[in-house]
Amino acid sequence: MQCIFCQIINGNIPSKKVFEDDKVLAILDIYPANIGHILLMPKKHYENFTDLEEELVSHIGIISSRLSLVMISNLKSDGVTAILKQSSGSPHCVMHLIPRKNDDKLNMNLQGKSISKEDIENALTEIRKTTEKKEVSREVLDNIGEIL
Amino acid sequence: MSECKLCLLAKHSPNNIKTLFEDEEIKVIFYPTIVPGHIAVIPKEHFTVMMKVPEKIIHKIFLIGQKFCKEIVNETKYEGFDLISNNGVDQAHPHFSLHIIPRKKDDGLNFKWQPQQVDDASLDLVLEHLKGKVESAKKEDEASEKFAEYIERLP
Image (cartoon, rainbow over all chains, first blue to last red; front, side, top):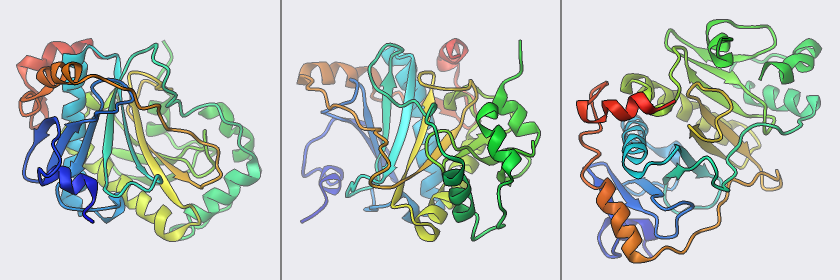
């Protein structure tokens, strides 16, 4: 069966279109995190952001920025959270643009977790193993929390 | 007023922050504030939010961001990632940044939301406020006159 987002793109499932061009479609999420929540997706079927060709990656970034500006100016939101999850099993690559209010109850805060130095060291080693492999010095690990 | 912390990181490379990539316009830093493998892509120039960043820089930030996403998916044990940018709310530093957060099933992170039930008339009203506005939001790198006042109001 065809992916639900492809069915929306093809017009087989009705949607509330905010923006459309030859590469992408933006619709209102009918079950939004906050009202005005937009789903921006490539028209061609891609499950993963990592499979998009470069032109499309750039286009999604630029249209996200433009849509965010429209959301700020026309919905009187205090901000916008852009989030794309390649971790949730979505059948189609989707950028969520969520209009934010200072007092909304969404938690998109990226600060404040306590992370062990061993975990940081392991992650850095793992991420850099295809590039330049370096160990994190003890000094780095001692100071990292103060810098960020 | 003290200088923005991300501007400091963009301009300098303190020994205790790992730079994964940099060129004249952007920098990719290892930014472990929420999970150990957390990475941030930032413009070197100070722009508070995404809507103020010139589109040629957005282009580069997303392309470089995708390269690191690929590396996480293909070369590490993480099971996926979340790409996230907070603009104006939940923003730790007033400097645009695109965060790549590698995910594992049991990592305890929760960027989920409770879907709201919204009636059709309210959605249509919102649609009316948004539809047809995107084309004029930006022309090339310059915001059109129409949006200039909103850009000025942004933090």
